[in-house]
Amino acid sequence: MDIAESVGLAATYHPHLSTIVEGPQDIERLLKDTRIGFCPDTAHLAAGGGDPAALIRRYADRISHIHLKDVRLATHQFLPLGDGDL
Image (cartoon, rainbow, N blue to C red; front, side):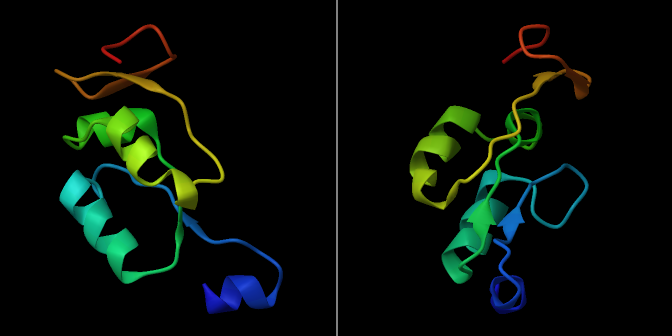
């Protein structure tokens, strides 16, 4: 955050499957222990076991952008909005 802010940027975390922060508990720990912003990806949040709407509401004050995407949860196939389970 300090490095980003020193050059006029705002750092945000964008969760993805297969990273060290992908599920709701990981996101909670990251946001509790840092000042980083949150860029929720609706499909990755759902595929990681989270409720995208609940996470967006909970961390609304840390969000500057949202990545809207759908997912077929059984296969983790990412799809355009309206074509999956979200």
